[in-house]
Length: 69
Image (tube, rainbow, N blue to C red):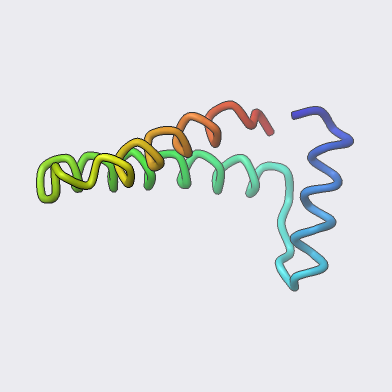
């Protein structure tokens, strides 16, 4: 994510009442990725038939990692 995209995302968050810095945003993105991976791991063990949920969580995890802020 380039500086312009980061600024747009920070502005969108601010519009929703969320103040953040680029560093905070990067931490949140990493946390979101880890949360998605953790949930996918949980569902894989607890609800293996929830393949769509597991796949969606794994995909979301990868998307958060791709957003380099």
